[in-house]
Image 1 (spheres, rainbow, N blue to C red):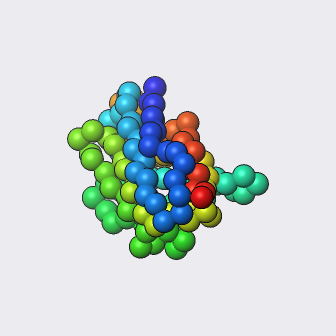
Image 2: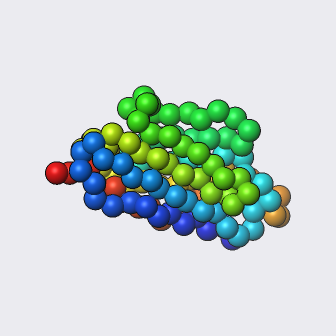
Image 3: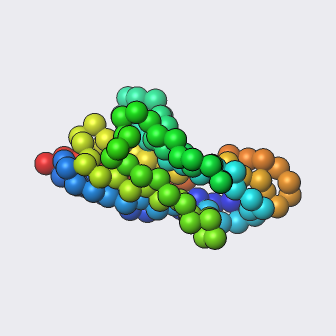
Amino acid sequence: QVQLVESGGGLVQPGGSLRLSCGASGSIFSINAMGWYRQAPGKQRELVATMPSGGSANYADSVKGRFTISRENAKNTVYLQMNSLKPEDTAEYYCNADLITRTGYRRTYWGQGTQVTVSS
């Protein structure tokens, strides 16, 4: 089994910053990519940012220049630094990992979600 545990969400004023963290643990052989998605009420889940192992980050156009994804590979952890937050960034944010388990299977796992609310 693999678990993804997120933290760092909360309420912030427009223009503020938050940093999300997500750690993966369990039966992990290697991680291909980790990333963040979000889902606002009444909308579909959408990509925010992803970072493959050894590759370049990929961002949604709506967050380019404001959000930065980073990974700490030794800890199987991914971060999302969110600056200049806007009300439209309000959503449940989900961590995602594309990995190979110790039993040799490629699987995708999701965290439980962390709420980000941008409001004055």
